Image (cartoon, rainbow, N blue to C red):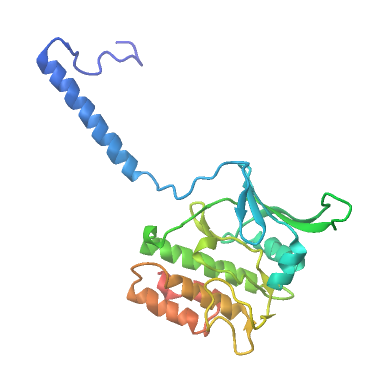
Length: 270
């Protein structure tokens, strides 16, 4: 037989024979069983997003996926800064500093665009636009996260915050560390830097963010690098079936006695 040719791949069926028809049916059943099993082994797709269709988010935020990037736009960014007490300078500094960290989102541009509204009586406003080049998917349910994945996510957040806390001349705090802001590509990384602040941030009396509690701020109502570490401890306790070791580590993070850099190297991750 010439090289590269197949002489025979299996038995030759004669569908006129009952035995061959039975064999064919059994083969088809086995194929269906295999395909059914293969589907259960495929990674779970937690969220489908249509390209080039804007996704409306809270706080006048819009996200558009373009295939190789995600463009986040915050209309009337001046009102956004006023509400959350930060600035374009802090947000840009956070994104620029994040470029050199594998546990943080990356970008190709961070800019403010002047937008003129229709009508002569409507004042123009600024729009914050961030083009993110590192894309990932959110883990929308803690029930889908294994203990190993939980550790990976916590270590990524600690590594990301340690990098931001080491920024010069002022440390940068993420301020919104929670499960929804951890993306996977497939490795976990921390995203959503638009609430970043230079540290310390003096938080107004009537202000709070999602997942903050009475231990987030210090006694002067300041958000500090220790607050980021505290919030990572809060996030860790939200995962289901947390082990005793994880609970003990979460308590250590919430004690504000350990830095993000030291926590990322803790024996908990061994």
